[in-house]
Length: 141
Image (tube, rainbow, N blue to C red; front, side, top):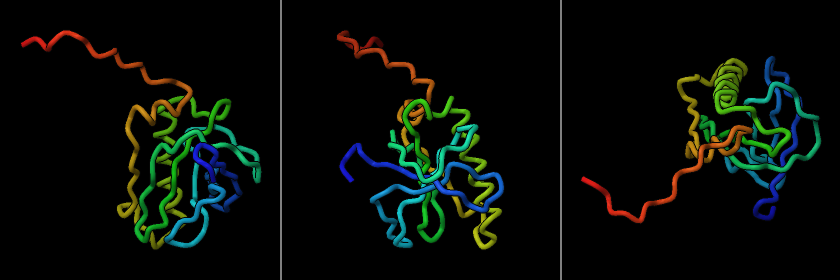
């Protein structure tokens, strides 16, 4: 897949409460040889199944013992999550559901690694406040 042209499709899983879970087309996870697993945290609705959606960015990674990690992704509008709080709640929901559906997997052995906060906030419908430009003046003491 060309840079900036990655797409994901979503599938139904028999995990109660889970929605918007799928895979990145064209990328393989070395842990299991399957495509990278992804989920879209923060959306309050289910995306159409088996429809390709362009990825906007990776928000973070759910690290799972054994290496079968999951990517939390953002899609471009109109499917961008409404807020950072919605993303955080969606990630916590995913961790809870995944641990429940995989009895051998302890939640204490899973961890969410968020990318840079500014990057994560930029992936939502609410945008991070721009940083002021650097000053030409030397710092005051």
